[in-house]
Image (cartoon, rainbow over all chains, first blue to last red; front, side, top):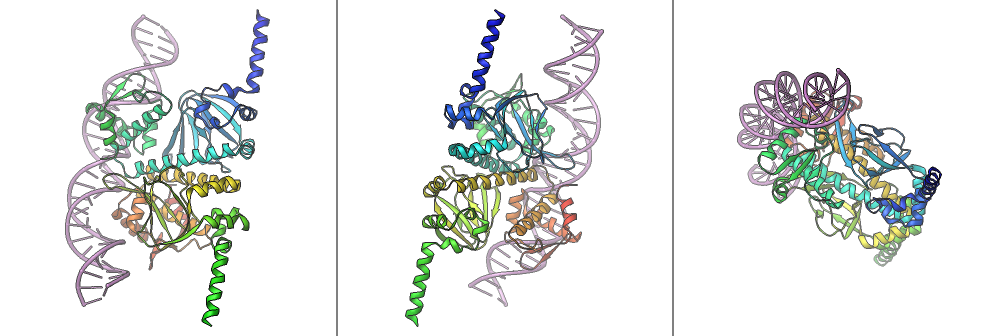
Length: 245
Length: 245
DNA sequence: CGAATGATTGACGAATATCAAGCTGCGTGG
DNA sequence: CCACGCAGCTTGATATTCGTCAATCATTCG
């Protein structure tokens, strides 16, 4: 029995090493979606999977950018720091997101796991070789970068010109929209990150975020459920609250 | 004489139509730098030059993205609006900059000339065909998008976490750095945009920008010269003022 | 020269930060 | 299994930065 099990495990291992990506559950929502099975196996040959615990650092701003990542599960925050410790979170990544688009010599920001995270790791040099080999992968990366730029511009509008309430509501709606993209329900949404993370993402303090949540709850726009879940009661109203219209 | 001049003009025109890009003065600082002369002439065949006066709109957020541009001269501002008119300027473009990286179906932002602007205009569809034809052009575009993402993240840090003074100083330094990149002196710098444009770029009001300039002038960090020029008196001090270090 | 547009300066107010104190929920160990 | 402790969240009182409103000044352009 034990011998049989061992043989079976070994066989599965071999097939995984051969092409683990083929059966990847988030394949369709990541950059890998543009690759066929044989191309995926080339990609798998340079990839290693990795698990990361909450609060663990994945990349450090300023370090040589030797690794690129694909998030296969969990939530990651990207951030930049000022010398005195002030922090700006520039984005949250979830399953299917690519980490390391700014393929400059050094990472332009740090990344840390918010929850338990699983990811695929690629040596940058070999990944870039793959880009030359598969032009459609490069095209896809340009597409992703393009979308991130659009998001970044939205975030600049939020940070520079929205009120605290508009910021928080915009955040809730954006999380809801990403849930829809993943095929989940638009409400309730899950907020795996802390109030302080939300604050640093929106350019606010934890106190202001907390007060704003309370305020939205009182006005009936949202409901706070156990397990860091938030129900968006009236998304039309919320949409108006998000841009002062 | 007149006939000679005419013939000469016509000849020059023909050569320009043949390959005007080859002699383009900003060729080396734009995406065109990666193309050789024959490739440039393919690019020239889909390009049209255009002049734009100050305050004239170049693209409108939400419109179908049918044209892409290369700025050959002058200054352009990119911005997004909220329904009630609040405005966030997401960037300024100068000679050599590419406009339209977010090649989505619709423009994600508006663009308006700040000064007299000259530019090259490409139909998006034909430009994308060129990307397939010249992989190095696509690679270059990814490179540019990547750099813009880094800049966008810096701007998020500025908007979300810096004080008014730090914002203004960071802005002055970034303009100075771009001048260096263009081969100009780091000081004095030229600020072709209005105080109100600067305010909308930094998430401030014109009054606060004005007061901050006055304040920096009093403390001897800058000098305001005629013609919207600003001299950066002590760039080390300014660098410290830009991030609270 | 005068009108208009943009820049500066001033007085005041409001939104959000800061400082401080409880509260809640969850994991841990007795 | 329950109580304890701790980290994160909420709430309150006050402070501060920056925005708002308003007036003056400067500069350009007809």
